[in-house]
Length: 190
Image (tube, rainbow, N blue to C red; front, top):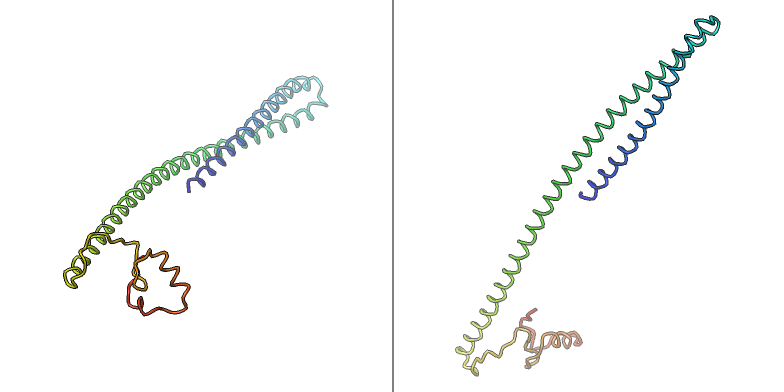
């Protein structure tokens, strides 16, 4: 949306520059037409002395006045369109500002959610570690095994009556065709 707003602003600026060139061209035509009108007026005074040419000059003056009127109408249209384009540029600037504010708000919310997710992950990991140690302590008391020294590692698993890293165990298990009796009912931790 931000890129679309930037493109619309650029298009508005280009359109405004085009209209400025058109206004300049029309001003030039207006000046030229005004000059022609002045020349026609001077010629008109000469025509009063020379009657046969007078009618022709009157037609030229009328044509120049008509052209001048058309130029004025075109200038009014261009001015109206220029005003409209300026309003569009202002609206696009407002939308761009609003989009930037919304983007900053969403980024802050995303960062806050990420921080909360990281905190929740750390708390969950600690809860799982404590639960694991809780079960190990109970197993030690219930089954009278060797002392629970805390040498347990969550990255290891029992496989064929041996403790080995989970990665190695998965590699060995994938090489075998079917499940073995020693690990059919044991849960794998990932």
